[in-house]
Length: 233
Image (tube, rainbow, N blue to C red; front, side, top):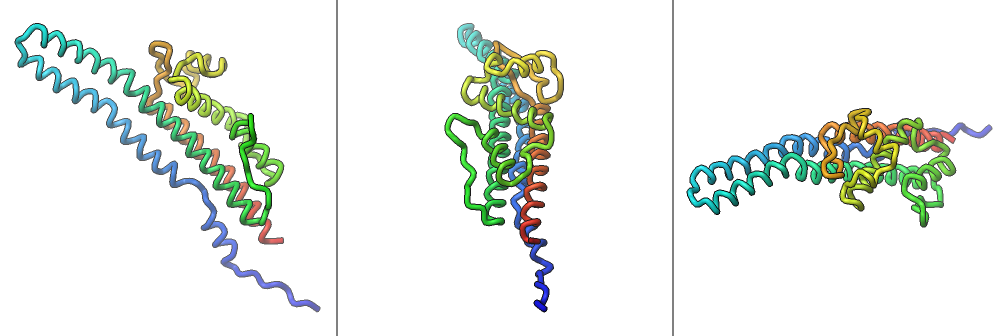
């Protein structure tokens, strides 16, 4: 009678510890969002204080007019331009972190179970659709737990594309997302619109950070279960 196989009790523990849950990137972004939220209003206010002090000392009418115009620009930039650039960049970084987490998870699963076919973004198809197809066809789990979670990440992708490729123009967004922004349906779309451009804020950044973090963790949990199941066979 063959002797039963002996399994190292730490095998699964090691596999769990080695699994790339992609939390580090989101932890860094969480800290960055807090810093940015403090920095944006402070930066504009400080410039305004310095210009105001120069105005008080200036007697030349021409120079005074130029300084007052500069102050108006600083106030406008602090209210719209700087937040639009900074928070738009944050949303781009959030989607990049989600993409990175998904790629690491897919590759970790592939190497853990000895699967030969690598994940690739196919021509004329976007990352999310390719990742969804790979997760279902090869791992046997969905990339997203629900349609609502999927839609949230699609919205984040749309904001990323609008900012990175369209200068943050509102009309670059899908019609359903434009309507959501106009109606302020939830924290993620509680944005201002200035000169046809959407302006992000800390609320929208926090909303999409938490949504992305939950989505990648849920997918990671399912992929990890598949890795563990493979070791038990």
